[in-house]
Length: 165
Image (cartoon, rainbow, N blue to C red; front, side):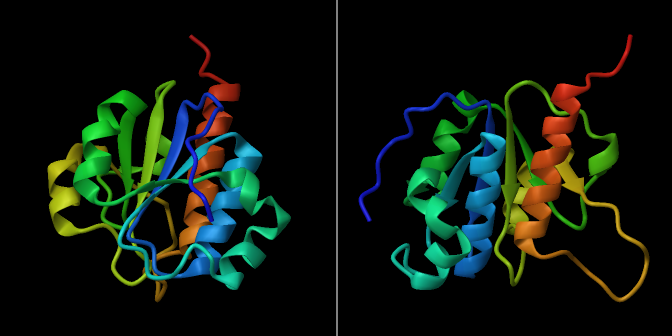
């Protein structure tokens, strides 16, 4: 699949750092397309972008998703200041999704399914870590594509309904 730079203007970016499961990436891509967000994938990926399960999860929209592919975290991080303020989603986030205010240019970062974001990233951006509220119990985390959808639509909700002064 040829990779091309997006021609659309985005102020909401979703970054999957080292994703492992193709259908989660496909679902996240479909969410990004529906919400007008740009999807970024940071390599290494745990699957091929040609994989049938990825395209099936993205349905016939995958060609329109047009993800930006980054060869490494370092290459993406160099561009991060030009994209917006980063928010790292982790079960150990310092603030709740519900109490986080997202500025007009926001970058939502999500880690791989088996282990989340690397410790060094969570430490480097510790003040910008966000958790999705969950009831106490046996569930440690939500599915990656579910987390992406919750984060993206909370940002969109805030942007559509700013707090009254």
